[in-house]
Amino acid sequence: MATGDGGAGAAGGRAALRWSLPQRRRLVTKVPGPRSEALQARRAAAVAPGVSSSSPVFVAEASGAVVLDVDGNSLIDLGSGIAVVGVGHASPQVVDRAAGQLRRFTHTCFMVTPYEAYVAVCEQLNELSPGTFEKRSALFNSGAEAVENAVKIARRATGRQAVVVLEHAYHGRTNLTMALTSKNMPYKDGFGPFAPEVYRVPTSYPFRDPEGMTGRQAAERATSLVESEVGASRVACVVVEPIQGEGGFVVPAKGFLPALADWCRSSGALLVADEIQTGLARTGDWFACEDEEVVPDLLTTAKALAGGLPLAAVTGRAEVMDRVHPGGLGGTYGGNPVACEAALGALSTMRELDLPAAARRIGALTGEWLRKMQASNAAVGDVRGRGAMWAIELVRPGTKEPDAGAARAVASACLAEGVVVLTCGSFGNVVRLLPPLVIDEALLAEGLDVLSSAVAAAG
Image (cartoon, rainbow, N blue to C red):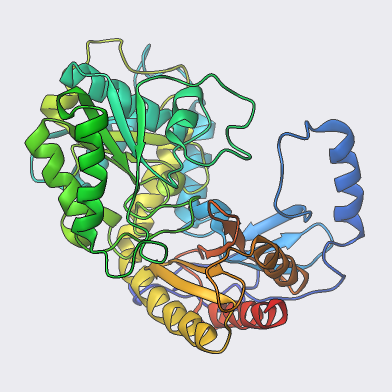
């Protein structure tokens, strides 16, 4: 992990990074400060209120695992722009490759006059994703686009229409992906009607499932509903997040994902792994589905792929991807050359610094810290996560009743002390941690200490 006051450091000691900002927390005003408050007033007059921000702090610069606000406060970032800057803010290879491409050309449209960087990104995704079979990839702009195109591909390849998703799922904000997303407010409320032929079944949520329910039992509960209420022969694909993101960082019980994969194989449906938040080293493997050796037919990536630039992908079995006719996939900006070069820089950084191993080290420290927090605070109902993707679910002590107010209070208290954390969950009661994978261990510990104090105060 990168270390120090803007100095050298490395994950596993295999390479060095140098950050433009000192990697430390430092507050010089209250948070938010006066300049952020002034910008917040300008924002209220100019920006549509439907575009919300979880924090009133405006950013001037960011580097590594630190965000510098417009008032000069240095904040520890335990959110990574929602798992986007796993390689760190302004990661050197991302910046250098994107800047070089900006000087050459910014756009031609890959569907008109293609360029090598698009091909190189697809080659690397084909190599990294699970499965030893031949693969193909296609590039898009956002995670929602990737999921929507994965469904298009699955429907075309199977000749079927039905799509099965899970409770607590989040897959995006386009019309189709809103239909796939579980939570109504704020993602779906008032925006219907939604795309048809989408069917939701229970997931594996160990904290809220009946006591003793195994992963395979949870999968059987889900697939039996599909068979009786949808019909297995009608299902084009089952779309799953190996660890649910916005739904609350829900880690399914062991056996759940392999059982779903088995059912898909036996029924002729395709398994689509939405790895937009979990993929590319975040959970300690290149992809979260590898934890139980699940090999999806189609896999979506976005967020961490280009180190902060908009890029997404669908990667899948060649015989599935090849079923789509020429011109059936694409978009004007999909696989933009600047974003592709940034992705090549991000992927190179992930390999050179062995960021899957860095995520595992982050997970060991974070998991131990959060479990100690849980042992001393009855408001922490559950601790769950893997790699550098962790969460606490806050409840009213002595119950499993969600406490969304406590989650909001914890996030606000952390921000006031110079630490950025995120909330999520179908009930709004989960505090989630997604630190950059290059964060220094001492900086991470400092952030966790601030979180502990905030949880103690809220509890």
